[in-house]
Image 1 (cartoon, helix red, strand yellow):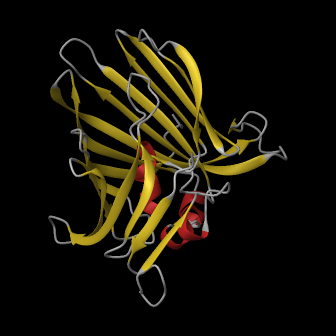
Image 2 (spheres, rainbow, N blue to C red):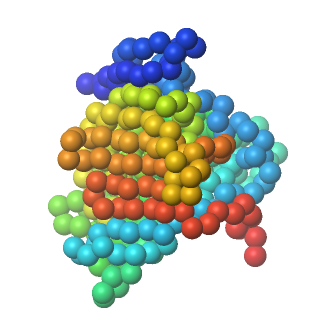
Amino acid sequence: MKYIFQIIGLYLLLMGSMVGCANQIDKEGQSGVLAAIFNANWAENKLWDDGLAEVAIYAAERTIYNKQRAFDYTLITVKEDFNQQYNVKTDSYERKDLFPVVKVNAFCRIPTDNYPYHFLSSLYFKREQPVKLYKLTSSSQEWCGNTFKAINAKGNKYQFSFNSYWDNQGAGAFNLDNDILFEDQLPYTLRSLKFKDGLIFSLPVAELIQTNKVSKPNIVQGTFKVNQVKDTTGKQTWRVTLTFTPEKQNTYLFAADYPHILLRQTTWDGRTLALKEVKRYAYWQH
């Protein structure tokens, strides 16, 4: 069954009138309604053509083994060229089947009492589609074992495959409808909002993929609310509040100016991010 989303908010029309509508994310990932909320050209800015990556490091916390753990969390955002044959970053730029994507790598090493946890997720978006996830891989490694997940857009479905070290999970695959967002993509996708104070909209969101276990993700109709607020230094920022249920709420704080980098994040399950530093450089060069 397709997930239907409703948009109820201010400023969606040029005259600033109230708008309410319902639609589905179409096969191209940008329906007319989504285009009213998100900027499809967000990644077309020449900033992403400088051959460098945006490397943002956050002071982070997450609960592991019933304790809140402190660590650094890195988000890397960079434009790459994929080839259609292998659906990965190309080594040859003479090919005829290239297309641009934006890659977001989310990496962390979380210390625990006995051994560390490692997580790395790679999310890919076609350059002109900051809302629709194109591809995701996510892996976890710790002393008990490793788990790998892959999500690929195929037609009107997402193909979700996995290999887990956990009993009752093992290896397998299933499909998801592609008219959803993933919680993991929000630090990127929400940067492409056409930010307006008071904007409210609703979309189906699959809860966190970056874990060491596998299950069919819980998909919840999330309500997003955008407000302009001042940070602790008095600077204007954009706050996006995502409500899954009255007891489950995430908050994202973005810089007011392009490229609207994520400044802070707080989630209902105790995950937090606070920006420490951001640089642009070619991290792959040694």
